[in-house]
Length: 165
Image (tube, rainbow, N blue to C red):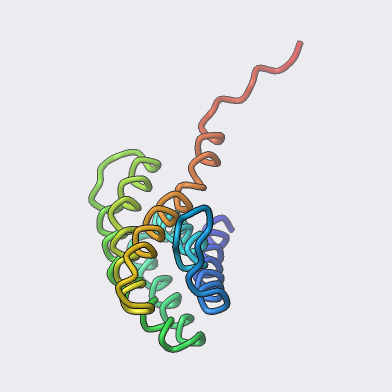
């Protein structure tokens, strides 16, 4: 059951990310410029790490292909930019997550650190052109949003409190 939850969250984050970009385009909030769906897409990297953990390497590629096909039902320009960025960055994320022989949380941090800027560069260039503030803003927000899952992992690792007497 848990592995299905991660798979659905993975696909849902991609759907919401693409929808927000289509609906709102590039936005500027608190001086930072970025495509509106970036928080959702940032979550995809961490959710994909969980998919890889629970489904294995080859099934993860199936989930990644399914996510790519889903993007075709959106705006064609956004879908093509998303698929290109997705293929390059998700492949990097998968590769670094696979080769790093570190604890799970550390692999999430490092694989996201590599894949988020690459995804931002490819997507923004293809979808909107060379808007460097949006590329940089997206990379920052995408990385930070991908780390949203970490506190939940840390809570799980803490030992249970001793029973009250």
